Length: 428
Image (cartoon, rainbow, N blue to C red; front, side, top):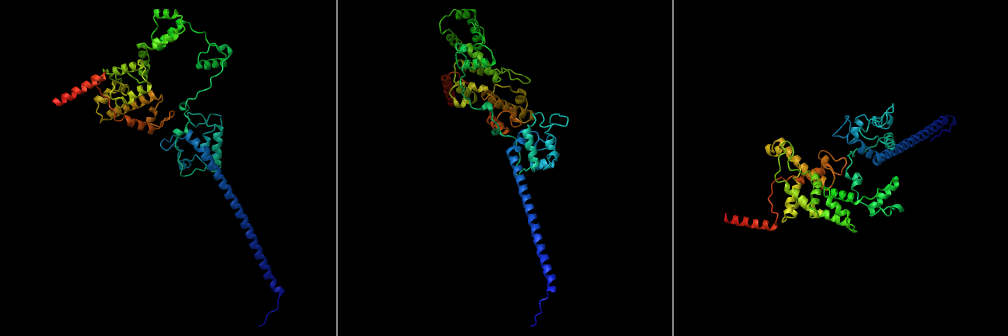
């Protein structure tokens, strides 16, 4: 086998081509690596932007939109043909340009216009704070991330502090100046004196006895004192004259008559039905007298409430258990809608529903000092009730009908009547 001798001149192009090929591969690898690094860096940057945007959405943006915008711009009530409830509704509306806050109409309506006029949104509400606007701007600029699975909803009961419903705390009794120490008689006076001192005021001089008895009599009895009562109090030099005067007025039957009027006003009591015909209620007065008697008898408030809501169940042997139920029927009653129009007709259904509504609202207004009637149509804006709460409570009264119920003021007479009725039935 013959071997050709090496020929350097012939091998040189081959070596050169190999070197060029290696150099090309090297450069390709370098460029590819650089591209991969760039892509990775961009991916890392995009991931960070998405993470930042998502954090802004969960931490701030979602709450801002739900509290300040969603009541008007939701899927059911799209004011301005615009909803913020779902991500696709926001993007499809054209109000949002992802990554470009300056082109996003959502941000534009939250800012003052070029003439310095107030922002157009939120309508009929305070503008967003500068911090809230900057959060939304940053959220849009970082990609406006919003998980597809999340649908905004209006704030629920637990989202609010409800300051008026917080537990009552005993504040420390403030110190008073030396000049007021002889004036204060109880802890309330300490707070009054401290407020006076802060405002640079001084308390009025103590009222004379004639003024005191008139004030007390009007407050407790609703009547002026007689000249004889006034003179007797003015001439009473005993140390407990004031205390005995208070006790005497609290023992007066006029005390219950005076303060029952306040209660009857709250429960909307009337001797007539109201509405168009305003027909007389011939048997409304027993509830009125029950309230007067309960106040004069110093009945425990818990029992007073129980008798008016479920007295026939909780106190079946007591006449007051029946009389107290007059509370449920104390409000206005549409005689035409209930009597002259069949319940099968729309007007009859409306009258029945309004009667249930009155029972619900009267109960909550009276015993809880809160309104609930707004929740008949939507979640309450100011009190802690949702529409579901309202109709759940209304269902409690759904089976309640107004009716005349006989009663005996004396349990012994009631028992005797029941025995006679049984005897009569046995004879029949």
